[in-house]
Amino acid sequence: MKFSYEAIKSDGSKEKGTIEAPDKFSLSKQLRAEGKTLLNLKAIGTKKPFYFSFGSGVGLAEKIMFTKNLAGMLSAGIALARALAILERQTNNQIFKGILSKIVNDISGGSTFSTSMEKFPKVFSTLFISMVRAGEESGGMVGALTEIGQSIEKTYLLNKKIKGALMYPAIIISAIILIAILMFIFVVPTLTKTFKDIGAELPTSTKFVIWISDTLSNHIILVGLFVILLGVGIYLFSKLSITKKYADYIVLKLPVVGNIVREANTARTARTLSSLLIAGVPLTRGLDIVKEVLQNSLYKKLLEDAKISVEKGETLSGVFKSNTNLYPVMFGEMVEVGEETGKLSQMLIDTALFYEGEVDSKTKDLSTIIEPVLMIFIGAGVGFFAVSMLSPMYSLMDNIK
Image (cartoon, rainbow, N blue to C red; front, side):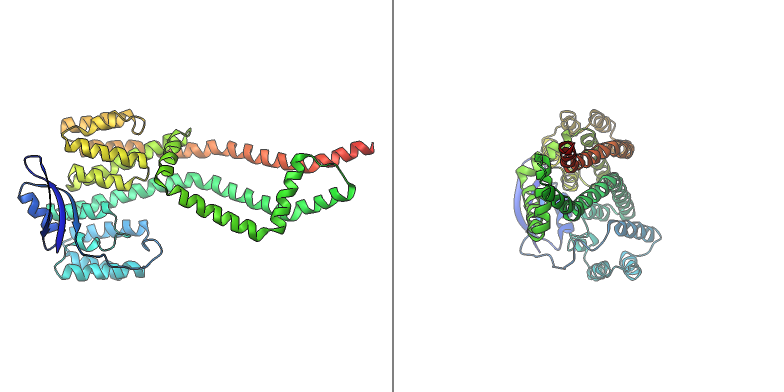
């Protein structure tokens, strides 16, 4: 197999070229033996096999169990191919069963575990593959899998807590919108007929409510199409890099929410980078992988800058300490202590635990803060509707008197 690569030579100069190798693992090992540090690697003239599924077809919880079970089997002395074959028989997920079957066949044919996993990027992330590869290179596969399992589980729990905090307001707002639509379609037309029969003079707010009701009642298909097109338009617009950049910036500036997002990204950075370093992944490669894990474009740009700074011989802590708008001051200080003591991975784990706890506490507080805001929102909506529909009746009664 032919690869194009970019590496840093022992004298600090960069080297680009193409080379033949059985697989990426062998090539990486060969370059390290020559005193070179691999930066980028890409297979030439190969295509990843296509398999169809909605999303990956394999849930995060299932990946956690797979990783823990595989680590347990390997620590018990079971061969990798046999352990994977056992897990293949145990899973009820047909997509995952097919993937594990292909991986077992690849390994039996002489391929490495990490190389085989690269064929299924929707299931196995770059983080997963890189840590497995590091485990293969160092001979510490069990430790690497244990770290992967813990890292994925912590990320899963963190995401679950954040989504749980947002679930309540999402359900309430959805219910309000549904009730409002039903009222506009079935209740308002009855009141509108009454207003027309008595010839009452309608205020502007009432006319606005009646217009919405008429639009929903008489053009429900067009309204539905408009909502769908609007949703698609917003989705496509949000995918633009300039839009995403501004949206990510605005989210960080929101009260309460911005602080949770900042601490959640800090926890993910610390957790992921510590797992990679423990598994033996080089720091620059680790920063690349962390960049892919984080979703916020501002954090991606900062980690790219951090990688460049590290390649120049600068400290990682210096980058974080000069960007306290994204990472808390304590994070940069902890990274600096880790660099000075040679215990960077341990400092990162401690930092991850701290900020995971902070996010957990603040997401619970978020639900408490959102509840009164929702009550105000609901009250304002109900009040506007009530005033709009009842004020014409009061005006009519005053005229009768």
